[in-house]
Length: 263
Image 1 (tube, helix red, strand yellow):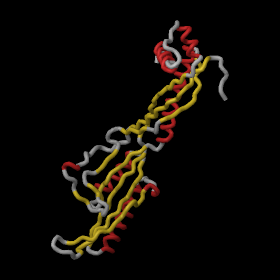
Image 2 (spheres, one colour):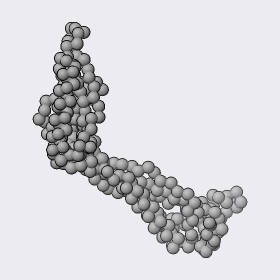
Image 3 (cartoon, rainbow, N blue to C red):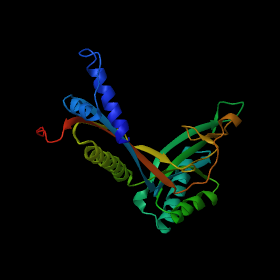
Image 4 (cartoon, rainbow, N blue to C red):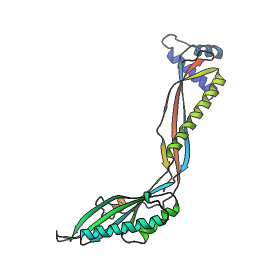
């Protein structure tokens, strides 16, 4: 805000505040400035700042589905396949602690015209945390090379999002303090902070930062094709940028330069 505009705003504020005591407020700029210094006025400075980072962690979900006539056989085959996948991913350099079984279920299956159980479907999910494209591709190969394994989706995250949010807030506050110093120098006032507030960190990822399969995964572990209206657009996964934005507001009381500073 330019000094002239700020001065005009302050004058208008003082006029409204004293309307019940005087019908008219007039005088030259020096007289108005002296009058304003004798009033209690406040001004709020607001700034936003954005820090940009890059997603560096992806949580990839694989769904393992095995069918067999006997439940025990379905469970055994599913476990064997899961262990084989874990060994392959570990051999590709992925930490065993980053490979977790997140969910599993067993569902009986019957024929169309009979209620008799004809087979069982054993479903388990592996959630694999990866931090680079090579590891991501290793997980994708697991799904490509096995009919029983499907790529269920991936969520991309930034491991230092809290630190970047703090940096955005600090940057916004620095802008406010620069404005404070400028207005104090140009207008001859001192701005004493009396209140402040800041927004939650707004996190915005670039388009394509998430990935979902077109098929819908049901709680039981079975799958059904989505209708045309429910189809999820398939986009390429990416370790893309993430913008963190914070807005900070500080309210200052306008005091006469040289006045005693409040404790």
